[in-house]
Every structure is written in C-alpha cells, then in structure tokens.
Image (tube, helix red, strand yellow):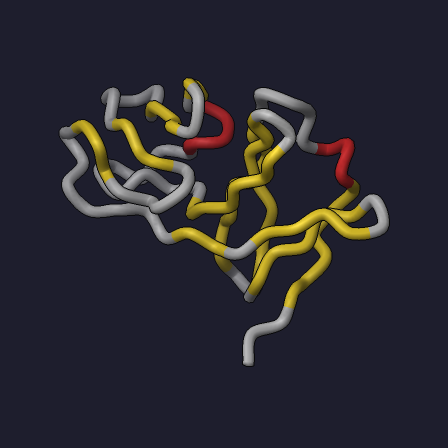
Length: 103
C-alpha cells in the first residue's frame, strides 16, 4: 500500500506556480491551479528539462520551456510534441498546511 510523504509547506506552491520536491530519489513537480494540487514527474520525457522551473502553466497543462512539449498535469499525457511519452503522475494532497505526495 502506498503512503503519503510530506515534502514541504503548502505555501511553497502558490496559485499558478509549480515547485519541485524530491520523493524517494524522484524529482516530483507540484503545481497549484484553481486551488487544486497536481503532482507529476519534474523531468520532461523529451530531453530531460525541468518542468517546474522552465515550464509554463496554462490551465491543467504545462508546457516545457526547452522545446515546447505540452503535458496534462492531471494524467501526465503528452498532448503536444516533440515529447511522445507521458510524465508520471502522483497522488497529492494538502494536510495540516503540508503538501504530501503519494509514494
């Protein structure tokens, strides 16, 4: 059974932004849009760029700043190339002022 791991304070991910956290050796991006949290691999599947620092959020998608690939933050699906592989998604919640990611 998976467990939730605390990664940081809720205020580390303000509305409309993403921040990266390390979870068991994986770089996981957490974004907040419309009050909802989304957690997904921070590494673009095309060339390995960081989505949290170089990406641009538009609704529930994030566009990689390196080559323009667009991913769904809900499902991880690569919606526009050049990336063809999805990014991994994670369960995420906010509890007692902390962000927790399912690991």
